[in-house]
Image (cartoon, rainbow, N blue to C red):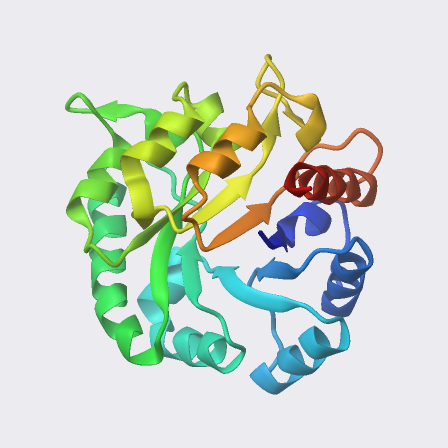
Length: 239
C-alpha cells in the first residue's frame, strides 16, 4: 500500500508554491501526491517530482477544464505519468448539473482512452441528497460509462449519512481511488487516528483499489502536523 497526499490539504492551510508543496509532501514521507491545476509545463512538473522522489498518479481538475481544455489537460497528465483526472466538486442546487456531470464524464472517458488515462468523480456530502429516491452519486454511477471511476471520499460519505464501507462494497472496482479522510462523531474532519471511521476496515474492504489518497481540511495545530500524523498512522496499520 502506497499513499499520496492531496495537495489541497496544504494549500488550504496557506502553502501555495508548488515546489514547497512537493518538498513538504516528501518530507512527510508520502509516496506521491494528488495534484491540483498547476501552471507549469510537464517537463517542469516531472523535474520537481523526480527531485522529491514522488509520483503523481491522479489530479483534481475542475469540470470547466474538462469542457474547454480536455485534450490539453490529457496531454499534460499523460506526460507526467498520471493515470486519472478527477472532477473534484459540483454543486447540485441546479439539478441539471447531474446531467452535465454525466455527459462530461462520458464524453471525456472516450477521449481519454487514447491517452491511457481514466476520468472520474470525487464526492462530497451533497451527492448523498436524493433525487427520485436515489442518491445523486448513484445516479452518476448508474449513468456513466463503465470505465469512469469514482474516488470515494470516506469522510464525505459519512457526513452525507451513508456507510463508507458499504459504499466501497457497492461501487466495487469502479472505486479505483479512495480518499482517506477522518471524521469525529460530530462530523468534523480530524486526524486519521482520532475519528470514528474504521480506517483499517476501509482499507481492507478497498484492498483492490489502485491508489489511496490522504486529504485533510481541518487541523489540530497545522496541516503539516496533521498530515504527518496521518501518514504515520497508515504506515502503522500496514505493519
